[in-house]
Image (tube, rainbow, N blue to C red; front, side, top):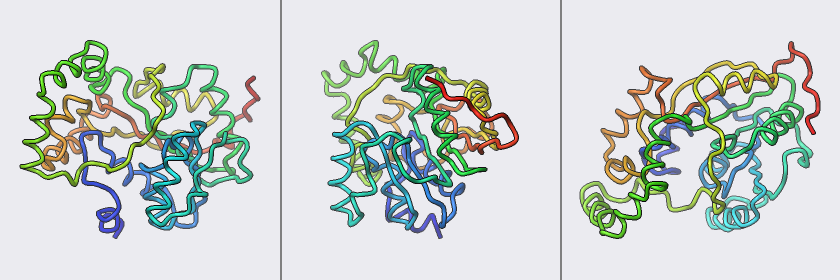
Length: 270
């Protein structure tokens, strides 16, 4: 049922496992849950499809340009733009059942990360749920990104028109319905955290969350894999499936955790 609805809401799977991520989120929420997406960017990746599916969700981000862009998109899609807000989490007057922090924590330095996790803990209801996704700081995605952006291979491929030619060939063979029409954020920021399968769990436990389950996103991801393979659905499905056997080698991690009411209450970090 959910998969049938999602087919009409989001593109087909891509190399980054975005559809798999959304399905994972859906498997961890209920229709009557109140949800906040923290660091939602434009809101188009998670908040928008969940709102279309009838969930009570608010998306917040501190980047005004991303929120304003998202609000225009939401209006075009028939969704109230008011569910997107330029805000910090402590300023919201709701205590949600679920907080989603997807691809957020890797952008935060240590001090901000600790403060944010304490605010999340204090904002959630007792036994509330935190859903986290982060890239593997030593995984395939980071390797491809380093070669593409830092080494400059991506610019070379664009300058020599290789990317244009490959995309044209792919569009002829597999079409374009796998491409998201909207940007996920208008704010570019670097990764300052390098999480591993173990360290992301230790971080959450340190800040009084009980880790319930951890899984991998996809095995391979990044600009090279995206250029060559996104749109070829058998490869996308294989990429999503292989990671079950090698979760520690995944390009990213999905972490489900609960507020640990049995542990000590977190102190304020200033």
